[in-house]
Image 1 (cartoon, helix red, strand yellow):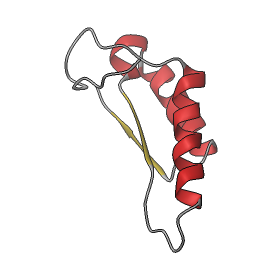
Image 2 (image 1 turned 90 degrees about the vertical axis):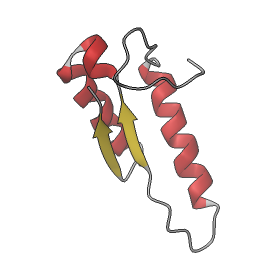
Image 3 (image 1 turned 135 degrees about the vertical axis):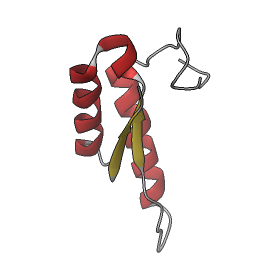
Image 4 (image 1 turned 180 degrees about the vertical axis):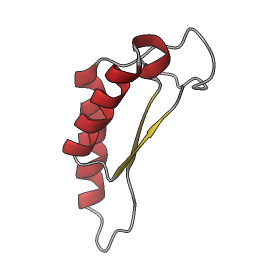
Length: 75
């Protein structure tokens, strides 16, 4: 999944969980290389509309486990 679409539009693609988590881990690793960094990583998913709230929450919990500082769920 390459391009980002507005979370309120229908027909968007949702990245598979491994890809979603790889992106979070890459951001965490990049942030760790910046000295005295104050960047906050917030994981976001639009999975609720396509897969349901349980799937969206599962993804967000996994993202926090992967190093995200917070989470945001879009409908």
